[in-house]
Structures are given as C-alpha cells and as structure tokens.
Amino acid sequence: MVVGARRREELDALVAEIEADGGKAVALAGDVRSEEYAKALVALAVERYGKLDIAFNNAGTLGEAGPSTGVSEAGWNDAIAINLTGSFLGAKHQIGEMVKHGSGSVIFTSTFVGYSFSFPGVAAYAASKAGLIGLTQALAAEFGPQGIRVNAILPGAVDTDMYREMNDTSEKQGFITNLHALKRVATSEELARSVLYLASDDASFVTGTASLVDGGASITRT
Image (cartoon, rainbow, N blue to C red):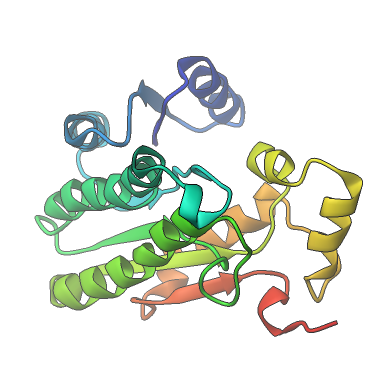
C-alpha cells in the first residue's frame, strides 16, 4: 500500500500502524495540487508492488467559508484545486497505469453537501465536491471498456477533525446529528468499509455511482 498526504509525521504513524497489523506500506508526502506528486505516487506503487490495482482519492478541505458574496477568488480556487483538480490529477495517472493491465478501481470522496442538500456559507466546498460526481461518471463511461471502475462515496457527517472544526459547539453538533436518520455521525472506520466494498471484487459490476453513506441524512425530514 502507498499512502500519501501533506504531513509526513502522520503518514509515518499510519505506516507503522499498518505494519504492526501485518501489512506492508510506504509513505510519500506531497501536495495533491501537484501533478508531479500524482505521478510520483503511481510510480512508487509500481516500483514497490509491480502494478496499481486500487486508488482512493480522499484528500479534501472545507475551503474558505462564509457568505458566498464574500468568498475570495483565491479561497474559491484553493478549494477547487484540492477537492476537484487534485482528485482529477490523481485519477489521470492512476487510470493511465491501470489500463496497462486491463483492470482497476478508482474511488473518490465526495459528500452529501451539494447533492442531497446543503448549508449556507459552503459554496466552494459544495461546488468542488459536487464536481467529483460528474468526474466519476465521465471517467467510468470513458474507461469502463478497458476494465476500470470509478465510483464516489458521499458521506454524511463523520467524526473527524474537519467535522469538529466546522461544528465547534455542542449545539452545532446536536443539529448535525439530528439531520441523520440514525441520529449519530459516522466513524472513519464505517466509511472505510464502504470504500473497501467499492475496491473489492464484490463490487465488480459497480461503476459510475455516487454512493450515499450518509446515515439516512438524504431522506430525513425530522
């Protein structure tokens, strides 16, 4: 497994955790906005493991929030660059390697925000993440004949640092929790299991999907 993100210290800790569980992993720190970094991650996977079978593009940012009429052009561009362009650059080189072997699974993390419903003040985030759904469908249609599956998960609220940053009071967290039919937010492990399904042969006939993993937020009106 090759893992990549901005922060080297956290990547090294993740590699140590994987290896402690009997797995094999190598880390490469970098900026997902860089096409050279996208190339380097794929090259490292091929160097270490011979080929690339699965790619999970999970990097994301909330971006500049607040009234949309006040969002700066730089703030908008940064959200698009990380959430959408970074995923495109990753997939561009991941798929380029996968087609050599006639199979592969590419997965993106989108969101229910801007798909099922949205909130005020998150235009850059919603637009960039919604763009991933169109990218998923376009890539799935283009590369399906070559054996490549492309899917996106659309999580509801997940208990992460980003979630706590956005919902920094008990009142805000209570409001978000109540939006979900299950009346709780997800754990990272629950999202990971959904990704594993899409990566696996169990999903061999699944491609082009925007898969809601949202605890029923999309259907709840109570």
